[in-house]
Length: 81
Image 1 (tube, rainbow, N blue to C red):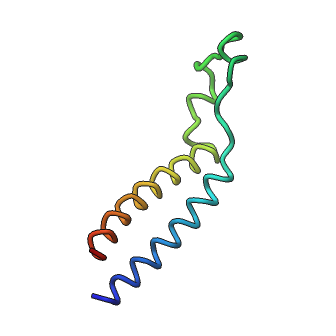
Image 2: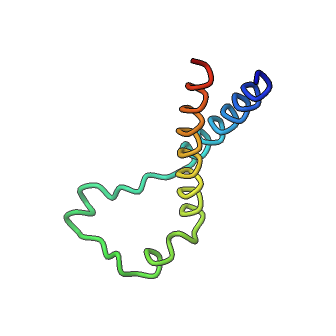
């Protein structure tokens, strides 16, 4: 059981580090007040294919890693109690 705990902690730390790097590399999507005043069209080619871009892939990877982080946090919390 101790080996499983150590392996899970190692995986947890790797996921934490990768998640930190991914979040730091992502750009801010918010257009702010200027986007509200001017208006932004979401019916263009970029918006339709946003998931295929580098930013879309990074966002998807971030979501997957955050779910894994959450699940591992709960599992490790149960194992150490």
